[in-house]
Image (cartoon, rainbow, N blue to C red; front, top):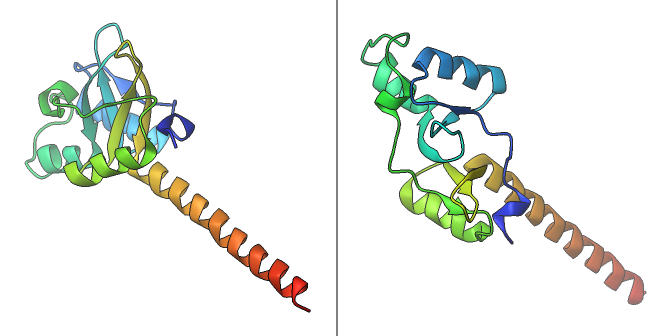
Length: 147
């Protein structure tokens, strides 16, 4: 299964000059755990800042969130995947790298979506539910045949 079937297209993006306070307010407003930092033309993902980054880098050190920008603390060696990437390969990358979000890019390297660990788990759980229902239905059908 391709991640294009489950990727989120409502991505919260910011420029690297955005203050941490502004980014945190966006995370709260949209109930997300990360913002994607984009290039000036807003087409390419150049970094990511997570709620955990804010806690570890700013809150725990007492830095001023009105002064520090996302560009100051963003992870800029961003792991990305193409929009035709395999679902399980994306899950494998996330597990191997210890990351919870993967920006999805087009063939032109432009940001088109976001895959999160939560989305992958919800999708996987849904598919397992389908399999469970199939097994129950199969058992019922077999029992009807054997009466």
